[in-house]
Length: 151
Image 1 (cartoon, one colour):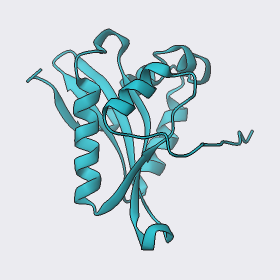
Image 2: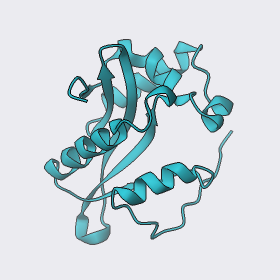
Image 3: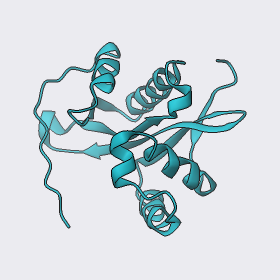
């Protein structure tokens, strides 16, 4: 898939990214891709924060994948930087074509170049295909993640 490009997202990519986030059973329940104002506000906040980037995978037909990579300074692990990966999606029409692998290779390389000593992510327990994908990339389920929804 030589035509695939991984590049930083631009604001004009937001409709495609929002559609990707809604392109599965779980995302369809929690995303509202038709309400651009929700995503515009988040875009401005992300863009204003150093070390917080959205990356997109692009083919000639458009954006087919995305993820968010956040570099987090911390005191744990002797003051190590860590990278958090969020909002990973590949278009349902393009899964199984190594787009996710290329996105992750780019994200991990970017994290390493930033000096991160750890890359972490959370994934919904119902996303069993995603679990297999992450394990294949070398991620290990070493921790139990917990979330508290705030209204």
